[in-house]
Length: 240
Image (cartoon, rainbow, N blue to C red; front, side, top):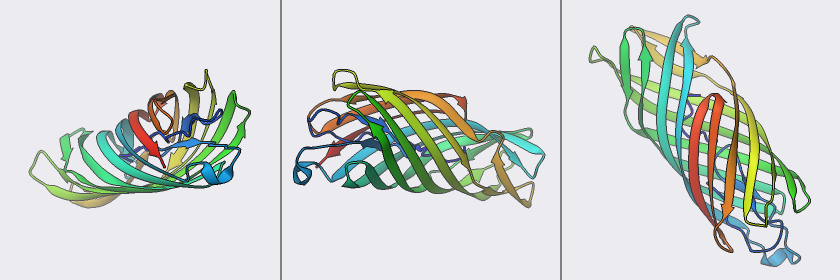
């Protein structure tokens, strides 16, 4: 969707503590959710800081009839808090770096603009080999568009995403996973001199990702979404 994070929505990895069953799966907002299940609750990491980047490509419909192809890129810094071994609360702030809207009358380029997100993830299952994760992210973004006729208009987007991931732990090092998400939210813009509201022509993502444990507390991930809203994201995270 117009959401330049997408995450995904999302997509930076949580660091690990080096104990079995602590590899990561990536959340909709880009920060991974690790079980971090330590024998000693006091020694497990409770905070994770990360950075991720995102590219998205989707189709929007404005005013019920005008369609546009939207392409955007963004980068985000994310801070996550883990109050329990299965729950992750996270917030992100960053910038959409540019992109474009392509309509029948030409291309409208995006300026850079702010992006923010709030999310919560819940690890519903993790037996040390297989894992399942539920994710949620609310994000907002703002930018200016510059039209082929020299027009300059504000562009604001709100996005709510709910998703799930299912994957496998390989040698406590690699965690490939499948991901599915549904989402929705309005885009506010001005087109041809009139205020218009837009939304995606499809409200889902289907894809896969891979989280990699690089050290005891440092991880990385990459995620690709070929179906629905198309996206490519990657990031790193450090637990402490």
